[in-house]
Length: 538
Image (cartoon, rainbow, N blue to C red):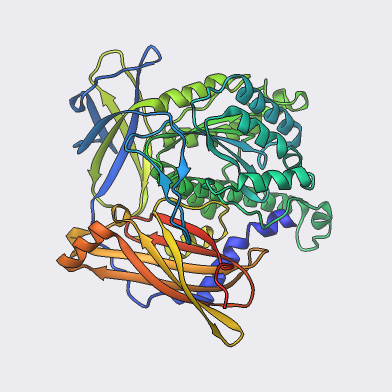
């Protein structure tokens, strides 16, 4: 079953890493650093933003205890396009062109993975109708899909609604589960332009074979359906994490309108519970507010006639709880009982256009867990909305296990991570028998590197480079940690010039996709860059 097998690709990559990418032999060291918690707060009165509030008008509580607000700012975002920086010739980068002012960015996620086939066409028509009739031309919008093969960027941020409509129309056959035709392939090529932040490449195919179920002699159909459900949840959550990593460098509060049939929460599956927590943490860290639109239980106008009625209530309650959690933990709202996307989208954009940013330092935990957040105001008649909690990573988390999992997901991700700015250039190639030895240089800008001055100017970066063939299989790779306590003179160099890392990698003859991954071990932020090996010839 391709649907089930392809989701294990990340785990196969992880096993490959354990076998061929040696980890640094050292005992993990935990330090008690204060955690900076940032809380975007939407303040309204009678549905309109309230301006001019001061820091003293707000009180932040964590687990019921008042916190001292360290940083406070009223944000008024701009509308502007988001583009990748054009690097010098011969170099590759994931850096995004940003100004000091946050932008009002919106992401529409069309979820075909978790939406019954009878509802998908209606959902697609509603999205196209909204893009054609209601979307303002100056509003940057990104359109993505969740599919059986994972995350697909239909089109990156654009302020032209017609471009989004054209892109979505071209991927219609893929949405409906048919084999992609020439129009879909042409659309993919068109969407992977130089300005794309995704540079996505699909390495798997759609499809789920009934014969795979019927031919399974070791289990029942029920167990296979449950397995399919678990894998579908994994695919959804991992795709959400990939999207959050891809948007990490973009300043400001991002609004995600998630058009979906919903996913369940198998409470007895500890691994899935952990994956939910990791996903909510990634979304919060990227400052994304989720606005789920439930196509099944809560939006009968968007559901196909065959899927409406009381038979959906039991499933709807279960799935609605998950959607509520996505909204609550991120500071968004569930778009309930609506027959169109206009009101939901307008609300999401308004929330990210004007808001307040509060930050405070939290004491570190010995054991990871959720901390409850509550924000109150002394201003009369003002309603506040913010995320109601966050996941604090304690010293019980294994740094090595976290590193391996993060890198494994980055290797198979269809989007580039932007949490760290990364610029790559090739510096040479030599023949080594039947292989080629490639030399490269990686540069990280100074403002992206985390340095723990309380721990003797500690800096730790993980560098991973892999070569992948046309099917996505990893054929070669290298891994190196840069773990240092910087002397004062070196600290100044990093702060002004960033970090430069030079390395080599031997690959077989042929052309491969090279993926460069940099992970800041102190902050958990990551940056990835794809580059072809073809420019280097012997």
